[in-house]
Image (cartoon, helix red, strand yellow):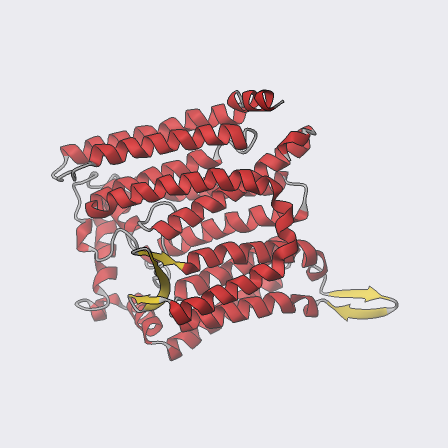
Length: 437
């Protein structure tokens, strides 16, 4: 039976589709390496090893999915790997000293994705731990505030074995499990403004108290840690998930009002929030200080035009912290409007693939979990791209799968593994194949 299961996975149609699509990632990264080598750019020692490691990790991840999730969505991993290939090429271009580290984190992330895809075929058991997940969210944030390390004005990191780990990335995992389980249990009640029972009319507002408490406690602690980006991310995620679960626009309106109130409170209470808002409104007034980064980002995007300066031929190094906060601006300069829109399209495809998994899932919790993960990744991408384009103030969060950063990369791959596990279980249930459960 086990050999038959593995054999079925090896020849899975979804995995065959995935393999064909993965060729696009391999082609991009090979062309990028060649372009950088030909440009006025000094390739770091070991660049061939970085390239080989990426291609081998991608292939091993594909082989792993053939075994543990043969019927899962065939597009998801391919989309993510192309985003990762773009990120690795630009991290090498912008910060060669950390390119090997980024490649190592990609390998770790792919391994975690495969392991999570296997484990999350039994994801319904997570539903029982919704309040435990909410408590873990708050406790991890509190522990970060007490024992964490402050970097760039925000206390968001633990130092473990010489490495810095951003705990707010792991907070997203706990919060998503809580939010999905909570809405799976209470979404039907929250969708009706009032209920009649026993001849009496009751309001649904008390049912939102657990969510309000968990979100409120998280926002307060994150605010004290000076992380405006994560606050915005959680608020937008809750707004989107509530709308999907209930169909009520009033929750969106309330969420927007809460987000505006939070930004105003942060503007009054915290200097770093005030600086970011002031720079967003008029970066030219702070051209030689806090506005320098924003102005250089705008200049870079403008210089790129439609087709870009060419990989390795632009000047994105003029933007401070470009490999993390402003990597989309670097992509837009060297690959142009075409390259920037291509990245946006990939995130839209990722959102679409995740929502298709949600629609195909029969269980309420699985549907909401897939939806929350998809919304989180899409919102995070939209927030960082919007900040680079000066549509909204910058937040300091990373562009999923593209920006440099180990914690973010690994957690995002875990989220993709959860989606693949949900997809595998859903397709197994559809086919009536008990061995996929």
